Image 1 (cartoon, helix red, strand yellow):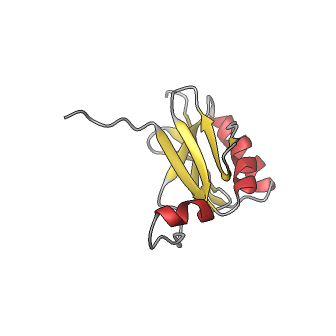
Image 2: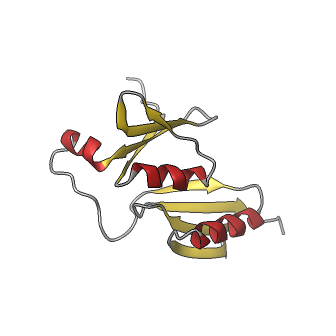
Image 3: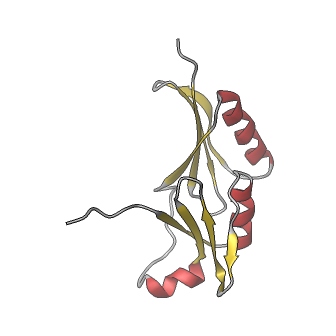
Length: 133
């Protein structure tokens, strides 16, 4: 039996335009699907495909689904070349009105880390390796 390949992440969003604008600040360029105004996709250089689908688009395919409450269950992680990039992007996003979940800090696993929420409350980690001691 062959193992499956993880090649796509689908994020269910309440406001497609707001989500596209948020992820553009992180360098992702989503393109609206010509067949559905409630679906957008972004191909990443590493072969991963990320999709944004509105709640209205996905709900018919997920019987009984409702938006989660209480905080992020999944986090998307964006790596920066240097710790200063984490601090700058966190400040930019919070200044733009996005909710900060964890301010930048130096983690014991030797990374600069911070977490913000996208427009639907999904966790977005920002991180960079700290300089070697």
